[in-house]
Image (tube, rainbow, N blue to C red; front, side, top):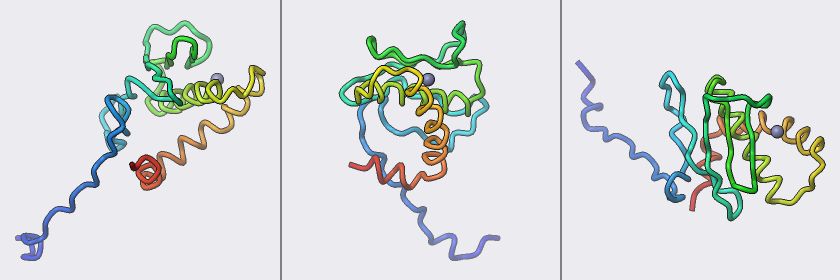
Length: 137
Ligand SMILES: [Zn+2]
């Protein structure tokens, strides 16, 4: 038998998700299905909409790829979900680097992104209130 106060308590309403357009909104990070949360089909970087492809036919030596000329990001589907997430973020950072025109020094770009990408994913994952605050309209 449950206490009487439970019967009168109303469920707390969920905060409305910000409307970022089709395929551009934040995903539910509480998805704990075996495959893990799925990446968005599209990601906006500056004025550009990048298409995202998670491919199981993977022949590249890297686990992800960015082609800013055709606005497309690829991620190796054979990676664990947590690695796919970090790899996608890594590729998003390449797209942001390109948009910001930070130069074509490949080595510097790769080193900066390799250093920042994992810690930025950790910050986003561990601070959902920050993500909601930053993405609110
Ligand atoms: Zn890279």
